[in-house]
Image (cartoon, rainbow over all chains, first blue to last red; front, side, top):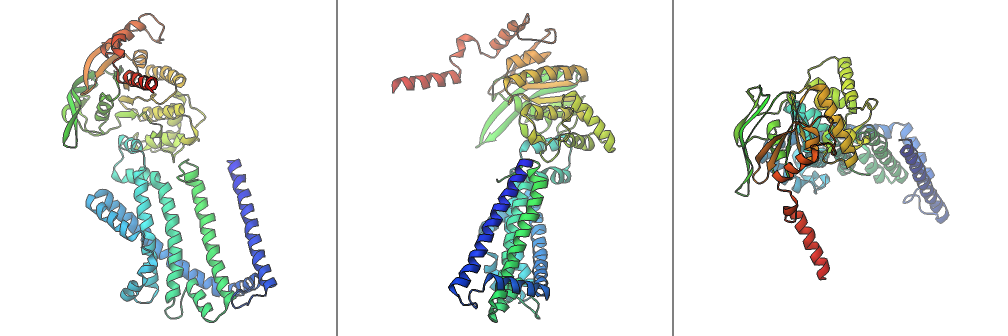
Length: 265
Length: 274
């Protein structure tokens, strides 16, 4: 336990050093080669606009808007995935349909559906939410069903032996047993939702002047405020890291790792 | 009065439109507190028979009576201990695995009472002090002990054991056999045990059912009254061992005809040929 903890700490330190070197190279090459700041703003100026845009509330406002859309889209995706999986466990032909749909829809990037979604739902937050949901639902369904199939049959039989009914068996045996796969499904779903949200916002982004981080970046590029574009990208990266490294890593540590059920390194 | 009665039980599967007869016309009865072992070669249907008794699979014909009542669904009166090490819930600690079983099957609501009883059963299998371990932190033998404790905690009428020590190394296996015998003597529970080891059958059981393969049927039932605790070098052990060997068709003369022996002979011939 302690050993793995100190190992992760050292790994984080090494990765931190690598990022610092990368940023220093950026700053130095901009200064030494005298690159045009419209195309390549220096790291210092990016940080400056990051601070300025954070203090004036613009970045935080955009970020909250994006996260709000993702929150709704992901929730719809997760709940529908659970309902669809539950139905396909109970009824065989639904499971066959879901398999076909999964094969067709899983490789299709959610953003590719945006033109159709705009035709159907218009250019408002509801279209972005729809794109997020469609991007995120397939990995959740796929991993949920893989997870259910990966549960050792003996554990299900122990549950039946103890007299668990269908509901209790699902809640107390199937869901925890499938949890390692559910967690990796959620990780992929989150990443896809995040990408879909930013990409969709860049296409129209706003209805009535309201928009998220993608819209922020798009607008700043339009006005050639390149440092602000980079500041927006930094926020996207930071949130991604925070959710992935702090959020998911923490959940994994207190569940799957503690139970010795890791599916990957 | 018999606790468990199997009445002309048969089971077949349909595989590719062909009927595979797993076992046929099996009639057995066990009295309360007895230790009965079904011994037979791999693939003779003895595990499927146990799974039918447990209610995980339905027999094709015949009936299973538990205290004169038909038993065709899984029930906590017939708790199973499996061979595989993954029968414990990995997301629960050792203690939680047992308290959970007590709560859902034993119907005990009070947490403290659950805990006390669970610790009592952990004590019985010699795992006191491992309450807060997760299954992946235990050795194979320890996992099987927890599984036995969990099954016993529910207070079943009969314990069904499907080669529970089959995946253990010889040394651990011997220790576990001795302990199971002690647990059986202390709790007075009825045990139906499935194994392919003749030695294990003699060491543990009062009655030995010799199963014959494809389709599985009972060849003979031998009662074993050797005094306990038993060791392989005691008087009468080797006589019983030879008798069982004879029934299972494993005597010296026929040994060369067993598939395994044939395969090694073929392999040797191949090596010599090249």
